[in-house]
Length: 195
Image 1: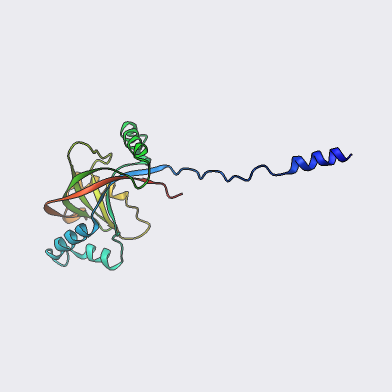
Image 2 (image 1 turned 180 degrees about the vertical axis):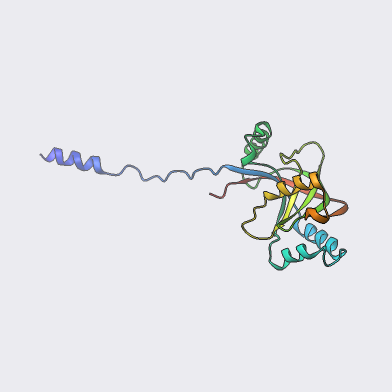
């Protein structure tokens, strides 16, 4: 009887309480980060030179604090990995080889070409200079800001697609202004999922 009781107690003892290793967060997207102060300065200078009517939406974004503190050009997002498997594999491999989050994968130059906006959001159309980095987006861009939290930055893709099809002005509801040869230095990084 005693040996049976001892046997049951031994079976109930917890095994080593070694905590499981934290689960590795998946890659969310790869982006070219840009110097925020320079972009803020360029936007301020650009909209200061326009009429108050043309600058209305930009001033609204400023007043409601809907312009983020950081800016980037998304090269590829996890959501578009299936549509662009080779590009996703390339960037995911580079990110893994570099050691993951916060590691700079490389540098490049970005030419800011045009600011395009609607009543919902504003974006800067960019050109990625050099051949090392490619964007899965039809129109590489920086999202400047959205009118409200329920408007997601990815809607910039829809705005720029419409802009390509119908242009700007008048009944389109799309505004645009050119930027004269502004080139910025950017650095490429992977961003991991938050959860």
